Amino acid sequence: MRPFQFSVPTNVYFGKGAEEKAGDLIKEYGSSKVLVHYGSSFAKKSGLIDRVEGYLTAAGLEYVELGGVKPNPRLSLVREGIALCQREKVDFLLAIGGGSVIDSAKAIGIGCCYDGDVWDFFCGKNKNVTRTLPVGTILTIPAAGSEVSVGTVITNDETWDKRAVNRGLMRPKFSLLNPELTLSLPPYQTACGAADILSHMMEHYFAADMESDVTDRLGEAGMRAIIHNARRICENPQNYDARAELMWSGSIAMMGFFSVGRGGNWASHEIEHPLSAIYDVAHGAGLAVVQPAWIERVWKREPKRFLQFAQKVWDVDPSMYPSEEAVVLEGVRRMRAFFQEIGLPTTLRELGAEESRFREMADRCCANGTVGGHLPVDTEDVMEIYRMAW
Picture (cartoon, helix red, strand yellow):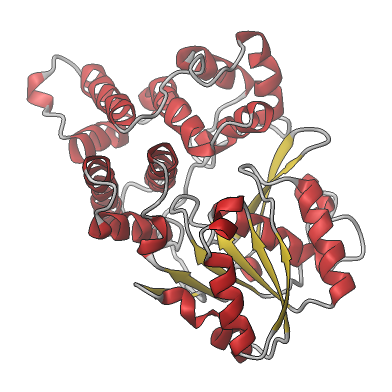
């Protein structure tokens, strides 16, 4: 096990009515004017935005609104948010939504404290992120884990590049998690979230360090819990307990529990980014297509880890199969079957991707060299993964 430092500075308030704490919590940070940042019109039509703004008013806080965040959040709206916050002298950002809204708020936060263009941080022109406006979240879509994580991912809608920035100072100050707010999510959106959470745990799991049994067992239990509860939600979308389990899974997947004492991979996320940037598909749906193909491409480089995954997560009995390859591929088959069961695509064709653009996507993915912290893949590997997923 590697040496590590572990802390989760985000205060999480979980349960029914958690969002009611927003005003009082923001007040504790000495803030006076809040940007209420959200995505679709549903957040407004459902009354959630108005209720939250009522809590802010009751706490003596002023606020301004900025809605319109889209999946794969856009740089243009981030820039609009920065200008609005600077003009209105906003000193706290409240993101109400899923990972896209929270990522957008985080990017606005670092952009407000920088004299140049915020994209400088994403394209690598400036790697010195030292300040941000504080961010709080009210989570409505379990998926990205951005409510507790150090990162933000933004799509440049001029070049259609999708890039990430990861810095500890970007962790939200608090996150309010009320599973009731997820009961109205459409089945496809719920399924995409489950795939995203499962992928996060897999990215931690497929690490270089085999001597980390506690982290392995936590990861396997976490993945099995996601699979179990995603199925329960499919059977009964109003199952509060299953929704609560999925919501908490999304947060703990990105808190750091599953990476303690080990490295990580993240190749599948990098391979998926050009797909969702170009075709604007849901990130979770893209991962459901890419990650099985990635396993098929790289498993022979470290068979022990992938055999363990097939057995511990997907209940593949190795005595029933003639070879290690058959065991691993049966695990992949069961993973794809699970994604199909909950209503997700398992091929690039289903997502509308064009084979003629595989080279472009691979070049974008590997623009700075190989991707993946462990078992790295190069442009030709990525091309083959796209073909295997086709």
